[in-house]
Length: 517
Image (tube, rainbow, N blue to C red):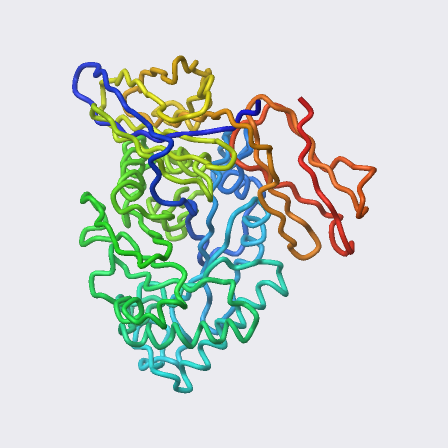
């Protein structure tokens, strides 16, 4: 019998004494699909390999040096989405960053902060109103420009864009002097341009790249910029993702309200940017704040994806990045990793019902049997003695806790035995704990994805606790001689992407995922 990996997420608020609490996680009570977790590299032109590994891989023991020459050893947080900027004119400086993230298994998508100045009433990049409407010359020209960007990223750089946003924050206007790239759109303009952009993508054989809108500055699109598009059955079919940011009136304090549930009209629902816009707080309190925000967006707003603003702060305000302006690690970086490393694209949220103060969310891979539970205890002094009952799960023998706290950063702990479909663990005060496990299944291990990227082939395979594997290939139509491409022992959770540099220009190549134990 094979076993497969799982993880679950719990967020907790405690009283002054240790609390006993009971949570039931139901495998059969399923909610939204998970598309992933991400952040943006906008305006950045390069990374180090260690930065790419720390942010987008699930590797362990990454030796990382920040801009202050501080050296630390960390586990990768495994972000699965990268948001990039389209410069006015339909170019980008993030080509190599996009390639590095994609090579580590992330999906890449892009957003413009403004159309070219000639397409705006202001004649400037900072501020002004978009001039497109209907199928006028501006709309057609701009749609072709964005479609060409998608095609060029694939043909020139091997980057397959998962989605393209129509406009970053189309409800925000910051003209010169002292402005930055912004452009105001109306709901009708977004409607009209959506249809033009889809037709341009279709004509360019790039319609697989989904259109995202409206990316309003506040959750959930308070001025209704997406309303005209989603209320029209014709334009709605052209939309792939409905998205907004999570900024509020006071972004030095941040959003303390529960995010509103949003009608997604059968489309994916993404939160695509948030940060505190002042200060530089790298403490566990800041990490706990974002752990709770992710929990609420997953369980109440029921988003499919969640993003921070920058990956690395770029303007001296450390809080704007998952890593601060010195590219130093922060507790919010690892708090996000408590979700992103273990809750992978294609997972589904399961129901988690708790009798105590913990905020608990749980997720599963319905094919491989993997699952995850993340627990957040925000109390400064109290622990929670938390029992988890796993209902309708196949056999589970143990779970492995991973902890971020004042002293630990996404650190693996000793496995906890599961007895009679239950386990108990003491959640430390001011900590995030993700329990990673594997439910038994008779389903065979499978290759998750094969993707041709320029001269390479990316093969994504699941990792299974306690099993040794070999990824093998053959160039024969009737394979008799399998050659090893990669191997590992004791799978530790989440998918692993292996790069085959010898794929193209072969006419054919076959892969298999071979369990050696």
